[in-house]
Each structure stands twice: as structure tokens, then as C-alpha cells.
Image 1 (cartoon, rainbow, N blue to C red):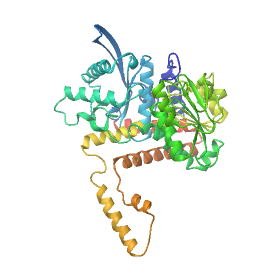
Image 2: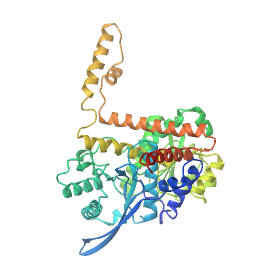
Image 3: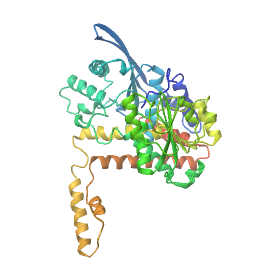
Image 4: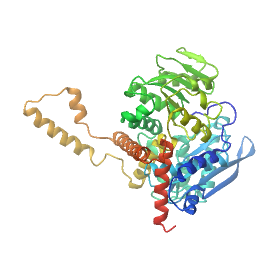
Length: 475
């Protein structure tokens, strides 16, 4: 995710915003108030303060790990590095993780972590020392563990940081055969899984595909047809926004007509080459000087651009009461966590904007993290046992058809006779997860008269599953 928008991230009252959305759904459910309150509150938040000697002096860092719900264990949730990390933000994100995992049926409770640090302020070897010390502080409190608490990447972190954390945990637990399952989002060579880097962005693509399977849902957004040709504005061309834009444009024929970053925006109604733009941002540090399209200095104004689909993929609170009334998009799909405040959500619903909520839309990351965790515990890559058997059977069938006189294009034969590797299986599992979760939301959305929109439907499904889980435990 890109750390967008100059100034402090809009995190004030983030927990209140999440709780407001929770309360709206809970009010329509027939569960005891005590049980609803148990689901709603954050179980615990740990604050750690530690010193690291860097550049000749001791620097003290503050980190958090919130555990929202332990109705299932381990608990799951990313670790973000940002100078704006605070307790309210971490607790709100942990709550969203609880509901997200329940919605997409991954067997985790919700957690989240953060370290108050700007990664750009430190050299790589310095950041490694900081990360390893943070991992040590969490691990000795059982806040990193394959069976209790499994972090993942988030804003400001990635494969590199997860590899450092996994290695630090392994050093502390040298006899734990499952130690690499202590975090997900690792490099493939260090116990990671193919398809994890793209997972959240590709999950956004699969979420939109799931909605576009139903013409009546598309009609509710005052749209028609397929994703092909749909005009999309993306806020944040970080990992999530980039892969969502790339998959939607290259595989579904959508047009990326606007990209918003920290230093402005690029607008081009003919369509933006996101790969070229990402390369430019990496080389130049921003959008300035990009030769294609039109540069807009006040990038936030492009959030209001007339388009079919808006993908906020940056930080929470980007759409609030100040700009919600001017949003022109027909569909908002929340690739970021909490990009629409509770008050803005009400304004947008009154306008007839269809919102695909964050707890569903960006669940691709935790879904593929689940696959990675299972892979680490099973100690075998997906596809190893069945791929060649699949190829053998396909060649057997194709050979018999050819003997009967059937002929097929060479490209078809190659595709038909190639067995599923790990990446194909991961994408298949992610697609299946996103479809099933959408169907669960949609059923409630269309059949429950008390449910007005997809966000309320998502919370309804999640709360019901968590309540049933707690009830099974005797609460």
C-alpha cells in the first residue's frame, strides 16, 4: 500500500467508525447484548517500547500488537511500519481482521500490529536491527507464534521484513519444526508461497468479477455489461493498487483513467499503462515528469472524477464527509482498510453508490496467507503430489481423442495438458474464496429486508459466524 496523502493519516476515531458499522448490523440481529459486546471489544492490546543503538546513540521505538478476538486461533493480522501508527488504528484494524476472517471462512481470529517508524529514515541494515528487536519483543510475549499469533505484511512492510521476523523467531525457537509458519508473506525461498505478493490486488479483481457475475447487482450500481471498458480510478499505486489495476486492465479489459499518489495524480481517459507508471514512480519517487496523460497537482480532486469504479487503495479515512457528497463513481471497492468513514458511508448510500466493503474486498491477502500457513505446517508445496498425474490423464484423454480423428489447436493442447502448479492452485483457491464470500453476502443482501447494502450484509454474516463460534464454546 502507498502511504498516501500529505500530513497525518486520518485515523482519529477509526475504531469508532468501525464500531459504528458493526453496531448498525448487530442491531438487526437477534443475539444477546452481552454476546454482541464480547464480539465487538478488543481483547487486548500490548504496547512495547524498546531501544536500539544506531548511529552512535540509543533510539527508542514504540510498537503495538492488538488481539481483537480469539474465538479461533491462531489470530492473524499484518504489521505496519509508519510514523503515524497509534493504538486506535491498530485496534480498529484488528477488529476488521476478525470480521474479515469470519466472512471468508479462514480459521483465524483477528489481530494487528504496528511499529512507529518511518522506514525511509533508516538504512536497510538499521531497519533490519529494528525489525528483529521488535520481533523479539513480540515473540517473547507469545505475540508471534505459528499456533497463537501469525503476522503478515502491511503498509510499510513486505517480504523482506517478514523474512527477518521469521528468522528471528527461528533463532529463538531452534527446535520448532513449524517455525516458518510464525509469519506469512515471506519470500518463496524462505517458506513463502507463489502468488502472495499479488494476492490482495488480485482479490480486488476477483471481488469485482464476483459482483459482475450478477446483472441485477450491476444494475443496482447503475451499470451494465462486463468489466471490459469500465473506467477505473485508483488511489494509491502501491502493492495492492498496482496489482488490482494491472489485473483488471490486462485480463478484464478495464480502463485505468486515473491514478492518485502522494504527489498528485495522472489522468488519461484513453487508459493508463500502470506498469510503465509504476516504473516511473520507482525511478523518480513520484508522478512528476510522467510523459503520458495529464498531471494533476491536487491529486485528491481526482477522487471526484466521473468514473465507473473507484478503488481507494491507500489509507483509512480518504473518503469522509468533506468529499463523499462529490464522489461521482458508481462503485467503490475498498482495497484499503477503512478508506470510507462511517459518516461518509451513509452519504454515499443515500447517493446510490454501491460500496464493496473492505472486509471482503481486500481479503485476498489473508486468504493466501492462510494457504501459506497451511503450506508451512504441511511442509510440502501445493501441486507436488498431483501435477504430473493431472498431465498424464490429460495426455491420455487427448491422445484417445486424436486417434478418433479430433484435432485441436496447439495452444489448446498445451494448456489442456499442463498440470496445475502452485501459482495456479493459489489463484484457484483465492477465486473460489472470493466467490463464496460474495455469495454469502449477496444472499443476505437480497433476502433480508433489514439489510440495505453489502457492508451491512458482510457484517451480518461475520457477526453471525463469530457468535455461533462463541456459543459453541459455551459463552
